[in-house]
Length: 101
Image (cartoon, rainbow, N blue to C red):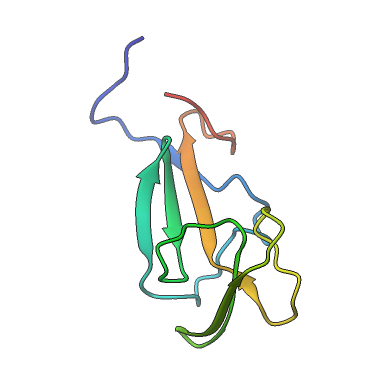
């Protein structure tokens, strides 16, 4: 299989555009990130756990509480808590879904 170097691809968030793993522009100016299994993962908790169950409450960019009690779909059960995990993947045909390249 030929994989193109220096080729521009789209990036997609496999979650709904307004809930779950989606982050609003006003959240967290600095985050830890990693590349894993062809995805870019963000950990807004600062714990380095990259957990899809991570939930936190915050004041501005400062986390005031963190726990891993989410359901694994980046949704948090407690009021005022938001997911601290996001995963982005390559979308090489711009259809909004993850692709293997």
